[in-house]
Figure 1 (cartoon, rainbow, N blue to C red):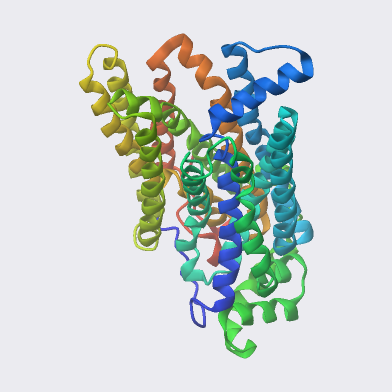
Figure 2: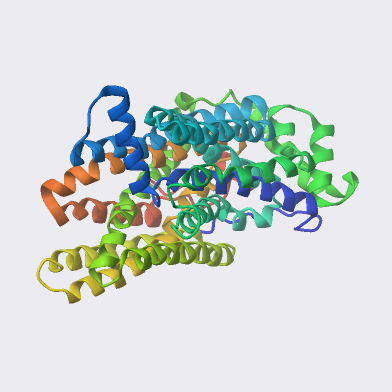
Amino acid sequence: MKMQHTCSTAGRDWTPTLVSSVAVALACLVSCGYSIVVLNAPQQVLMKMANASVSEDFGVVLDASSLDLLWGAVVTVVFAGATVGAMAGGSVADRIGRKLSIVVIKIVLATSGILLFIGYEKKHVHWFFLGRIIGGFATGLTSSVCPLYVHEVAPPRLRSVLGIVTNLGFCMGFLLAQVLGLPEVLGRPDTVQYLLVAFLIPTLGAAALLPFCPESPKYLLVNKGSEPDALAALSRLRGLPPQALSSELSDHQAEAKLTAETPRWTLRALLADAVCRRRLLALLVICVGQPSSGITAVFFFSTAIFQRAGLSQSPAALAGVGYGVANVALTLLLGLCVGRVPLKRLLTASCLGCAVCLAAFAGALRLMEWYNWAAVCAVIFLIAFVMSFASGFGTIPWMLGTEMFEQGPRALAVSAGSAAIWVSNCFIGLLFPVVYAQVGVACFIFFLAWCLLSAYVAHFHLPTSPPECSPAKDMKTVPV
């Protein structure tokens, strides 16, 4: 299956306006990725602050297990906010437009950063809860709105390639947080407050570029019914006069006509359509499978494994930075492959690679109880797992919604896929430490099963044709 657009397009692929538009979306994603993991590096500093806050506010000194539970809630509450934001993202994007939605994201992100800064300065942990929930909501909105915007402003032959932007932005944000969170940079008690708000820098950068970016031409034509505005936006994006864009505009007009002739898409309508229902089911399985592949659990163990393998705490932290670099590099490499290798093949190979590496990693974890050399093997399998994940499973689920659905149900499908990822992240983050404490390495069977299920769905149940060149009712789908 090749999920690649074959519709013709006129004009240059890259123009300053297109670059600015993609850069705005990427900056929002970087900010959100940073805000998700910013608490990880200075965890010990922040946990001491949280304990002092509880002691001052309630007169209680938490023991180690209670403090871990409190901090786990602070860290994972971001996923609850992200779930709500992702579910609302499609409706928000359709109601007020993609560009104005990005403005809302920036405002919400800035509010989150300010609350985290106040929380550390005032030594009150409840500000962290509020800041994390609001930041999670912005992250969920971003994961729904930005892929839509990038997909709709890009020329047809660049859409699949630019599908990596979502995961690339998150990975760059993770890496930035890991680097700035080192004690040698901003991870010290006297500088942590600046670490917590550093993600506002790319947010402000995106705000500076936004006036130079047009609204999505598809949104203007299909959702708003304004052909002159859509043609003007398309002309800016392609760097060509309006009369030279008749081919691409006619494709958008055909889609607008189809959308106008069909009822407004709701979740109920999406589930009632047999083709869309099968596609949505395949999308949700793969999106739930992404965090359920074990990536969260693997990163949970990474520092301990490096230390067991003979690295001290600082080199172990640097090794985490190395992971981030590898993740970004492999995501960029995947962008070169997307236009040449079918997504079905990339995703299936990535899921199977994750399954093999995860099984070997779990075995090495078990052997670490008796053999020191098993820690070195665990590091090797851990690196291999991250590389397998980054080569497809980390990126492709974010882009499947835009690739599998036409304009009408696309925003709703993207929101559903994003929400599935964040809900799964939330449950894995909350339950994994408890389950692992009870059953040990056996819990990796769950992650292995999801990798294999995702590989099966990717290979047998993804659609066989892109939505851009044919209406949903004419698209052939492999039966479920």
